[in-house]
Image 1: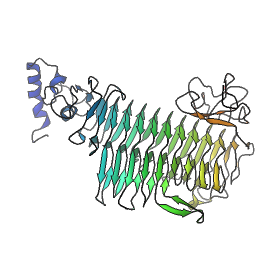
Image 2: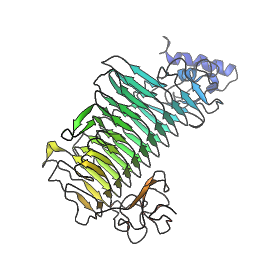
Image 3: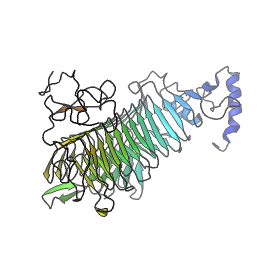
Image 4: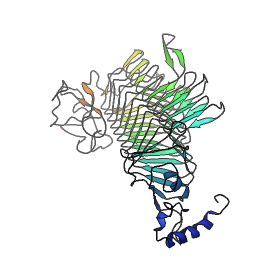
Amino acid sequence: MRNGVPRGARRPLAAALTLALGLPVCVAAVAGLPAAHPGGRPEGGVTWPVTQCGDDGAGSLRATLAGAAPGDTIDLGALTCGTVTLTTGALAVVQHGLTLRGPGAASLALAGNGSDRVLRHTGTGTLTIEGLTVRGGVVTGTDPDATVRGGCIVSDGSVVLTGATVRECSVSATSLARGGCIAAAGATLTDSRLEACRVEIVGGASHVAAGGALFADGSRDVALVRSTITGSEVDSPSGGALGGGVYVGYAGGTVTVTDSTLSGNRATGRPYAAGYGYFTADQGMGGAILSHNHIRAERSTFSGNEAGSGGAIAMIGGDIAADRLVLINSTVSGNTAQSMGGGIWTLLGGVRLSNSTIAFNEADYGAGGMLPQHPLFQGVYDFPPRIDSSIVAANTTYYGIADIDTQLPKLVIAGSGNLIGASSVAVPPDTLAGDPRLLPLADNGGPTRTHALAADSPAIDAGANPEGLVHDQRGEGHARLSGAAVDIGAFERSVGDAIFSDGFD
């Protein structure tokens, strides 16, 4: 029902007027008429064109949205403007599911006006955005008991981005604040970007800020495929800050990251004295991602992120199980933690690394590389980390053990064929030590940056392939086996590589 009139009662008149005017049924919305589907068809599946770039009136995006049915597609591909700027508040998407389709993220943007978010999806299905940029949304809140979320996009269901960009969005509140770019139950990003988004607690409130780019409550899955999350942050000067790039809640959905990059994100929380008072850290956790559910990353890179603990990845709580964090053919490099776990920090649950590289991360207090913990269940639920054919080396810390540290002295690392620097717990007997001779993180081919191996690296031909991988982290065209045996780490040095130990060719 809309404006007191049942939805179906308005459609026959619209269809009749459309036919009388000699217009295609889908053009009814352009003429300012109520949306009507062809007779006998169920609602959904109709494509409605947007024909003008203003924020209101016939043919506008706002008017076209108002007439669409669940399952329809709104097509902005014919617009000749570069930006549709909203002047009357957020666009309401009331349909259970809907698709917004643009000509390409570089060609058309939906822009907020600095006083509201861009899209509010009250349906519980899926809001799909293809080939568009969404930018400039701002949400603020002063109610200390409210939750403020979704700087550019908020959904009561899931958000799917394909070839889309969401950027320069913010949430600022004196209460709980979530999702600088997007807040939803779940999300799938394919060939998409989230960048330069921010969540901030203001006014001295001791609340939690979460999900600088993406906040997902965890009731549905989160997936990143060939996508990038970069330059986003959460900041709570008097409270906790969780997931500078991504936060995923407790509800049980899984997180998968494939051929993707999470870089330059930050979680900054309330300062506190750490390391027996020798330095100051903060309550920020998970610079790139904090999840309470299972994370699986393949052929992906986490670099240049920063937090109080878990500079790149923090996994806290949830079910107590093995393989809660799985990294395959992936790189964690150049991340920083003011406290523990410069690269990875886990609390409860097991970690599995295969053919991955954890290097050049830094922590002030314990484990520049990775710090697996579950101190509440020592000796009962000790799922040992399993590390196979991986490099965990060249990390640094000012207090504690540089590469692998833990508060579980009885823990023993399982696996084989690794190169591990300093570890506070026992490592497999065939583990190599020393300098892995990694070249700087660079574009060596493939969708993500990697550390190539210098010609004299001890990792060459010294690894294994327990996952049966066909390619190294770079993917197609870069075989996982080149030479006598698989190389340790995410990068396979091939016979034809013209890369020398000085980094020049």
